Image (cartoon, rainbow over all chains, first blue to last red; front, top):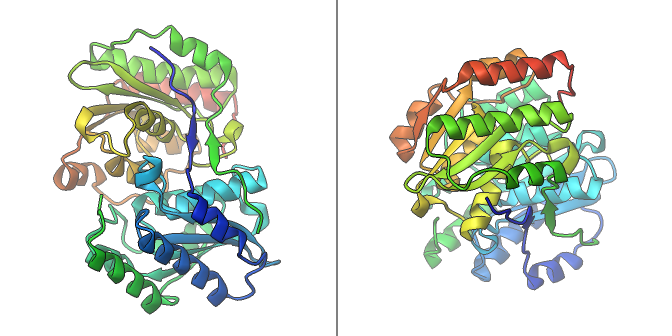
Length: 188
Length: 188
């Protein structure tokens, strides 16, 4: 067989990297961090670039941004590149490790993770997950969240020591999801 | 904030790409394809390169290999790069699409998918999944398979039309898992 190139390009658009450059180094509060994640989801809708989802990884002690992530499934032509996965890839690259454990990272996500992202989080070494929109808010605009076990959030804590906070700025995130639905974006 | 490079390098070693070049274009039977997936897991153990897991994506009609994947978590420094995920990334790259749906792809995996890979499969557009070692075989050598819902395989079929075949060449795959355990490999 012939060999395909063994790399994956996240293909973040110029407008995104330019916007990212305007972010402060530090996001002092949960509200600052989640506002940033929701801004990403909102920018993605406005630009018509991809799914209405954004994520931000912050070091819990210093409150430094380690990475941000945006859903680039359609443009990067990879079903893997949900906002959370893109953020984890970049955070692990920034820390040059397959685990974020030692850095005590909080992942802020504009929506609860789908089954794939939920499965990826414990392996990534993330310490804490903060979500805005709920699973059912995402399903309400036509996205499938996949096969998730009941009480995954409780079990994150019990099995992996990962604290999960839900419904943080839920209304703000839901209003972005609804603006996306009104635009009748592509639900892949 | 400063921008990290927005790409992820799968970093397959030379011995792997050289071995891959010796594969035929076509794997006529399920046994041919699963033997190849198990060979990948076995090679990874012998070379001490990563987790004892391999995957192969085959076009169901032509039986052409679309991509192979090996667990490169430790060497590529990415918790995402399980064999199935690496295989999906490369298959989507080969088909230049975020979905493999139109190609009717069978994914052969040397072990049942963990929670992350299980979540990723429906989004990838894979049509059929064939697994060798069981979830409990993987757990038996110390790996965590994550939070998976009961009867995920049945629901793959019901919700996504993805047929799942289990225990195909299970003994062969288990013997590779056990050789890995005896070598006391790193369980990350």
